[in-house]
Image 1 (cartoon, rainbow, N blue to C red):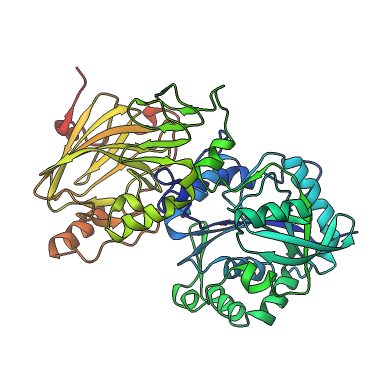
Image 2 (cartoon, rainbow, N blue to C red):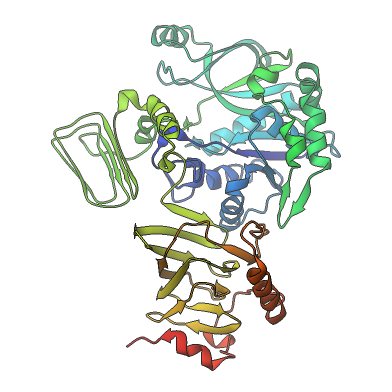
Length: 523
């Protein structure tokens, strides 16, 4: 049967708090390479690749904080999305899917394959075969979900009960069940007609909007308004914040799938995991004969069934079993794996205490690269910076701090008070407080630097952003007559500083040799 075009819709708004401290709101699990060499988001985007199933460019829905990371990760695997839609705030899955469906309103027969971005599927060929088998049912107007064949009586997932057969491998969906007790889950497994609910769906855009209008009539029009008032921002589409704030928050399960008469399920055993806990992640990785997984500089002695991951110092365990030990630059988790579903409770406690570690990583990602604080104290802070090829920081100034930059690897293109010069490896420069400055990397290699800040205040909010390539709003709250004058001077000298990647260092000559007086050459 011929069907409309198939569009993957990738939902990338989750925080993955049960994998804290590795996964946090600012850099959640879908943006990290937890199992393969690619991130979970990248694996999701590539999941339909193959000759057996033709699909169109994906629609990705993500939040404001992750937009540049999402775009960069798509570029890295050579996936060009049809759209990257930015949600001003999370309104759950039903509105996010509605926005994607509305983007396809000019293609009434278009089919949507809705996939969370943070799942593992070990058998992508089996998954693609299941999608192909479900296409006729979706084209006929059913809302198909993919039920995972249970491997054990888990209490971590919701369950789906299948009813009468509809078409080939597809069944009517009889009922949804919330996460059960262990005894109830065992009974479901014994009955043989229950599957785990993976939150993966296939349906036509038109039928989804029709069913949504029946059961949640306020969502569709509000999403349409947010789209109509939205705007393109660089290579993103930004939903209107005020209009989207009025959208009722609702999941697709509660809002549509549990209430529609058109719900269907196709059972499938495709090596699926939602990586929803440290135990689940441990189960996806190679283990020693003692059942341990050791990642980073880790050592286990007389220990069993233990997961140890360290991104920093040597971490050792002795005489323990069934633990998850996770060490990041700013936090340590030691948890009994039988309690790892409760890590979210720990994160909630940290949030109540206003601990930044609850949501923010030590490594902070920016559209130009990332920075990480290595040490800090009264009147100083030491950072490590990485500027990606072609990236550049905003044109800016600081009121309270000076900065010392040392190039570790790569080359830096520096602007300071209108003077331009470049730094090689093992060279440094000094940026006085109040200077209008900018750092760029117009070469093919990453630029790694050490930045030492010193002054009466070294907080991140001591910045007046005068110009920016990434659409970030200039900081007007701290502007003054002097900063306005500096901005006017900067714009006059360099009205549009556009960085293009150049293969040879000699492609950018130093126009102002006098700038070398602020540069310490390598010895």
